[in-house]
Length: 490
Image (cartoon, rainbow, N blue to C red; front, side):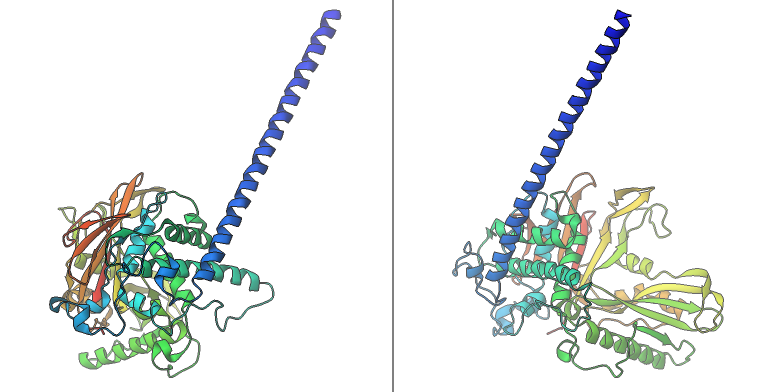
C-alpha cells in the first residue's frame, strides 16, 4: 500500500511539474508575442512618420528635385526643358520617337530582394510622356478622388485605400524625376524605401523582402498613377461622347456587309467611339499614354451577330508556347508575330446564350487589340502553372524585332479577321523598341534587370545600383517585358 501511494504521489508531482513547465512556456510565448507586437507598432509608427514627412516634402509635385533629395545637387540634375526644341531633344536618326526617350543614368539601391521593383521603376523612368505629364506646371496628384459616391460605412475604407495609392504615386514620381541626371550615380536609399513601404501598404504581397514579380509591381505602379490622376473631363478625352448613358464599352458589329471598305470604316468608327467613351470615363495620365483596349469577340454562327466587349489594359500579356501548345515549334522558340497569332486564335464555345437569338448556341470566341496605345508594354508570361499547383519558368526564347511595323501587326491578325469577319484596327504608325525588363535564373532564385535606350541612342543595362553599356536587345530567353514606343506621335 505504501509503495502504491508513493507511486501515485510521484505521478502527481510529475504531472504538476509538467503543468508548471507548460504554463511557463505559454507565458514566455505570450511575452515574445507582446514584444513582437510592440516592435511592430514601433516600426509602423516610424514608417507612418516617414511617409507623412515625405508627403509634406512632396506637397508640390513640381518642386525642385534638389529639395526632395539633397543627395543630388543642382549641378547633377538637368531635366529636359519643356520649352526645348525638337532638335535639342533628339538626334536626327531618332526623329519621331525622341520625345519619348529620357536618360536615367542613376542606379537604384537594392534594399533586400527589390530588384523586381527597381527594374519596374527604371522602366517607367524611360517613358518620357509620363514624366512630361508629371513635370507639367498644371499637373498635380488628386489627394481626394473627385465625384466618388461615398457612403457612411465605406468612406473611411475607401479613403484609406486611396491615400495608400496616393502615397505610392508620389513616391514613384519622386524616383522617376530624381534618377534622371547628367552623371551616373546611385539614388538615395530613402527613395526606394518609400516606394517599397507604399507598395506594401497597397498590396500586402509586397510588404516583406521576398522576391516578387516585376510585372505585378509595374502594374501596381501604373494602377496607382491612373487612380490618382483620373479626371472625368474633356481635359484628357478632348471631347464629350455623343451619349451620356452608362456603357460597358460593348458594340455590335454588322458582319454581313459585302463592301470591305465600308465594313472597315464602320468598325473603325465604332471602336473609336468606344475608346472616346473610355477616355471620358477613365481619363488619366496612364490611360492617355500606355492604356489600350482589348476586344473580346463573340460571333454567333446562327444569326451571324458579332458582339465585342472592350476591356482596357496597361500591359498586354502574351502566353509563351509549351510542348503541349498547338503552335509549339521544333526549335523550342517563337516570334512576336506568332504570339500575336496565338492571342487572336478563335475557339468554339458550346451552350452559350446569344443575346440576339435568346437561345443557347455554339459561338466563336476570340481576342484582338481594338486600340493600340502610344506606349505598348508587352509581357511574356514566363511564370505559369504548368504541372498541377506548381509554377515553373518558361525559358522559351522569343525573337522580337527592334521595330514593330504595321504590316507585321496586320499579318498577325489576318486569320482572326477571316474567321470573325472583323477589320482589326491598326496603329497609325509603327513601333520602336526602347527598353526591356529581363529575368535571369529560375523560380527559386533569379535577378531582374532593365535595358533601356537613351535619347542619345545608347543602350544601357541597369542592374540595381550598377549601370553599364549594352547592345540592342534581341532574341533571348530572359526577356520578360518589352517597351515599344509609337513613332510619329508628338
